[in-house]
Image (cartoon, rainbow, N blue to C red; front, side):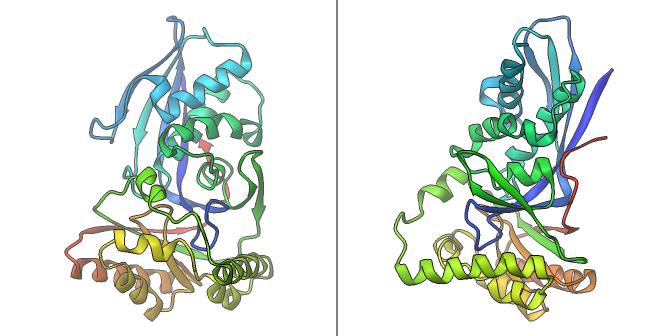
Length: 308
């Protein structure tokens, strides 16, 4: 017998909230199956959907490290556990793939051992696993993948995270072009200094975006979704980015930007019909630049990781 958990993909940053905002999608996501074993220690027995790119050594794998940290906390380091990782989403896509695996594995083993820990209590262990891939301490992917919803990370180091209100009917479009960007490399290219005027505008946009969510003010959400700092630096890594973004806006998107470190591009939309039109326009724009792409349409996932 085992426990299977699904954890969803995420849109990190949501444009204006670098390392501080993230949301969970309904799909895609990853699945992890956890079982007890008579062999002491943690073993990763199967990985599918990763084309051989992920390590089986637990210390080098996001899911494995998350489970190791959980078992250490429980004083169960010698407990025999086997996990299978089934990747149901592209790697290095800007959709929080590493976070989804870590979130799913943490919840699966917690449920298997009947720890009684809440998902919020499990967050530090999942977060430790996700750091294996990201190389940083940011929680804007792992928190929404595990907890669901739209998450504001007030402080990464202390995991001071808060769920924000999600306006009814808010749709998320994600278009993933078939290229890969490594999060570490996309982060390394960023300028560590920010001009004061850009900081002021970005801060105002972030605050107004949060107000727009709580008030259900879609117009304010759209006006606020303008990244002054990170998007201009990373746009050159995605062929045709501004054409794709422009296509989304022409079809009525509230706003559009880079999902996580890229190369996926997301758009927020007021309803499913606009979302369908926006996604088709974004995909056509990518094709004009010689890129095939995958479309994901989703309401905001309010559940996060779940036993299935």
